[in-house]
Image 1 (cartoon, rainbow, N blue to C red):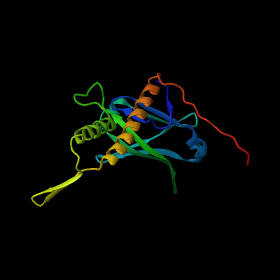
Image 2: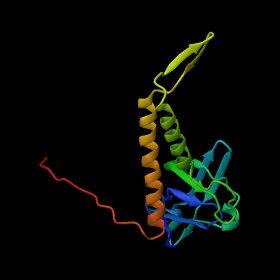
Image 3: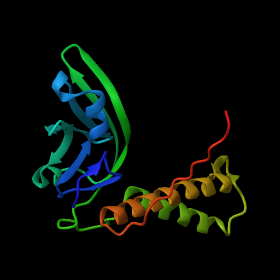
Image 4: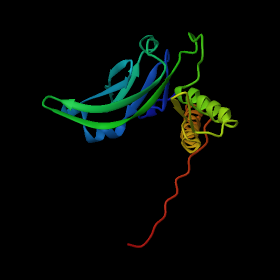
Length: 186
């Protein structure tokens, strides 16, 4: 597997994690005393990763024995550079840590795949229920409006499609991306 540029959209617990940050090294050269660090955070805790420098470029290389211990769920991540007396946030995003396929015993779907299935199950269950709220003996119950559920389904379907496309690209099976540029007069 080749080293990707930037944090991938998904990582697999138990695999070696590798990526590089060429652009960050150009803006904050390691030779000027900068160090690049990442922090991945979820409700269960956090993971801190310090990049190494290889030929003047920041690279992340995390051993499989270390990644095997990480929980499979979605994390928010932030990358920053620091040197004595200075710190600058350079990037942030989200990453899905997938379960270790060699150790998995249960559901190995991503968080987004599980949520999308749950949303679709609620939508299907609503097909026979035409009320959004009702009261019985002084107790009331409200349901999420169908329009909100459909919007959530659209968002999670897009996220699942992006995850699958990223996995295909990482496996060398992804197609090329096309970027359109339009030029106009100023």
